[in-house]
Amino acid sequence: MKKVLIAIKNNSLIFTFNYQLIEDVKDLMNTNIISDNKLIFSDDYIIENSKIVGLFIKELIINKTISRVVITNLEILKILKSSFEVIDNVDTLFISDESNFTYEAYEILSNLKKFKTISCYSIPTYMIDLFDKSNIKIESRAEILYTSNFMELNNLISYSKIYYKSALKVSPPMNAQDTKDFEAFIKINRYLKTITFDACSLSAVEDMARILIENRIKGIRIIIQDNITSKEIIEELKKKKKMYKKEHIDLILSYTKEYVSKNFFKQLISSTLILCAFMVLVIASGSTIYVILNNKESEKNVQEISQRIEEKIAADNAEEEKKMEIPEVIEDNNYIPAVPLENQMIPKMRSLLDLNDETVGWLKVPGTNIDYPIVKTNNNDYYLDHNYDKKKDYNGWVYMNYLNNSKDLDKNTILFAHNRYYSGVMFGTLSNVAKENWYSEAKNISIYYNTMYEEMEWEVFSIYRIKVTDDYLQTSFSNDNEFLEFVSMLKERSIFQSDTPITSEDKILTLSTCVENDKRLVVHAVLRK
Image (spheres, rainbow, N blue to C red):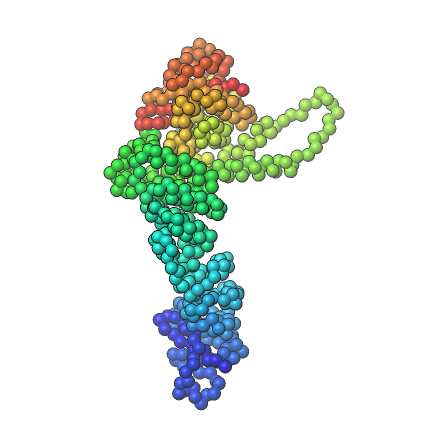
């Protein structure tokens, strides 16, 4: 028989085996003692009277404002498991025993579900995972020896710290041991969200991204804190950002506040973050932090919206297939049933109306990121700062000139969007079409704009940058000659020569975005089929 001593110290309720006889106990044989500052129970008594002992413990916790339970031996846990069933209001269990945590102890504590945090000396990694599934956090005290600078920098001194680590720091260069330890970290960790580099190292970023992708780890933000001025490195980072985005890894370049304040406009140029005129004014007025934060979130927001659009179209397609039935046989061969207007829509486009009832079409431009549904409302201001979900958004959305006819299309249909160059959303990559390697490729010249009812192919015939003007925004013409003179003006401005014939019967599509404070990038295409 063993005696269990219950004592209180520093808001902790302590359970330990009492191996010393004290004067008050000598003549009491195997009976139990209750005093003002301690309880002593035999193990048999606790097991046989677990509910009574549990009530004693519960009262102590309430009256003495106990915040932590301490046990000095895992064997005590087996003795007290039934008594612990009635306690509450204690979040932490501290096990001072330095032996390895047992699976029997895991079963007891996971079934009790009385403690949110359990501190122990050493525990196998798989048990940390099991506890985590029961929303119980483990803190292990058994330190592991540092094997690399990476481990030391992040204070990864125990398996529990590795398991719950949500943010990592990296100080390049990384050697082979750093990379090996990061790979081991990924296999144990479950909570990582952010990796921050204190300097830019393309090779280190590539190594970490490769390990994340190989282990199918998603939703990670890799932040590079460096004042990079090299255009080549920035362009390389942009390529990697686009590549990693497909694997749900977000690559972000973050300049220091001091650098931003001293070199803001220089940074805009070197980072190829060319903003529209009104955004430059906003930045100049002191909202630099707001702009930077929005650029970081822009690509994420557009990606989430695009994902919902894809899911909606896929779900509707699947539902449509389920509803398909064998059509009724009609004996009258001359009878043609009327088709409701909404059923004349392209199925993909009809699905989008549930997400945004102002959807009027879809635009795709080869060699760019432009692949978006198009919206139109009763003015040209709303979608400057609202996204496809009609929520306030710094990036806005791609929208049609409110004066245009979205179904039959006018002689000149005009689409607008912001130039989010750094994030590449909206018309952020439209500037690609002004590069010779784009317009010299025949396959790029065909762009695609579909209405709700027709799929259309358009041929680009004019690309140019021009100071702010509205002379290319005319949507209707009084006669054929006026239209042909208009087309001639557009061709004369173009940076490349097009032999595309355009007649008075044709219709054209215009894409317009800002490239500098007082300039616009404009693309014109003619409807071919």
